[in-house]
Structure formats: C-alpha cells, structure tokens
Amino acid sequence: MNRFAYRVYYEYNGPSHSDPFRSPKEAHEITEALRLFPTELPHYLTDQDATISDEPTKRDSNSIIVVVVTTLDEAATDDSVKKCLNGLDLFGTKLKQV
Image (cartoon, rainbow, N blue to C red; front, side, top):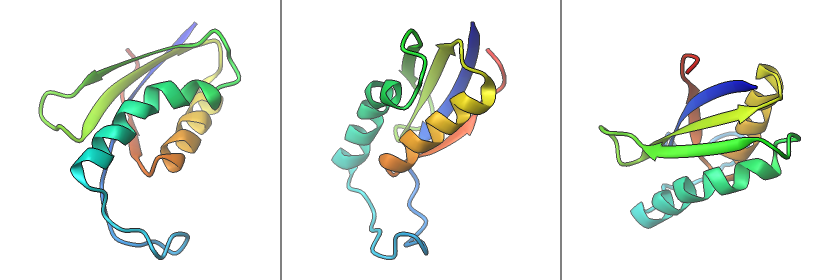
C-alpha cells in the first residue's frame, strides 16, 4: 500500500480565466468545503479500498492534513486529489512521504 499526505487549504487569489466570476468563500463555506473533502475524495479514486484520514492543522484553521492509503500509484492519486480539490474550490500541497 502507498501512503500520500496532502495539506488541503482554501485560498482566494481572485477570479481566474476559467472562472471569471469566482468570489471569496465565507468562513462557513470554507469549513464546509474542508469537511467535505475527505468524504468526496473516494468518488475520484479508482481504488475502492483506499482509506482516507484527516486532521486539522495546528497553525491554520483554513487547512487540513489528509492522508491517503491506497494501492494506486502516485500519479493516479495526485490526479484524483487534484480533481476533488478543483470540485470544491480548494488547493493542495503534497507533503513528504509519511
């Protein structure tokens, strides 16, 4: 099994070319998007036996740490995470192997 960790966070950096009407999320919307990420991610993973755990970060209330344990390789897992992040208007940073 492979283990991958990500810092999932919200950041508003203005409208984008692909979403010109993007506006900042309110605090409750950020909380909801972060809460949904671990439950939505399995829908993007092709490994039905993957396990996903999350925990809050100590220094930032607008982010969480998510750990994915899966049989998928790194590229497939990263792609699934990216799609889920985009769907919830979140960003992610891959952390060193855990």
